[in-house]
Length: 85
Image (tube, rainbow, N blue to C red; front, side):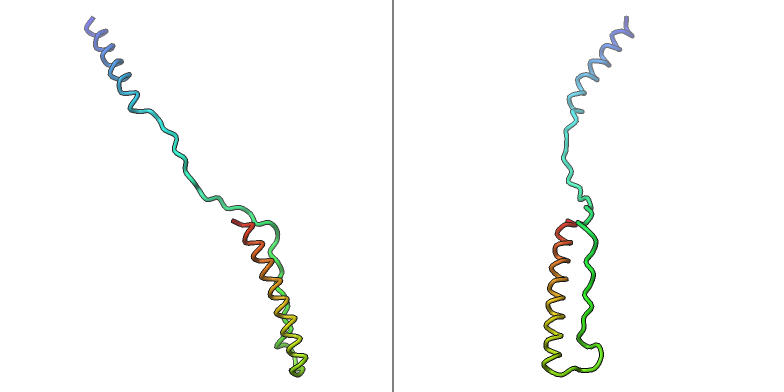
């Protein structure tokens, strides 16, 4: 009978401690890498500084076309980077 009483007391003690072990759900934010939207844009082939100097007017036209190509390339890169977040 003594063994039965001690088993009941042990079980009662365990049952009384169980509410202290109540598991709580904790939300963890983990950054996950996301693939980009598509392939990386191809860098433009700049024309300024290649070959002989063509003169001021032609050089300014070449610089303007290089600037426009650089702006388009930068816009594509920004779009790609926005998709990788």
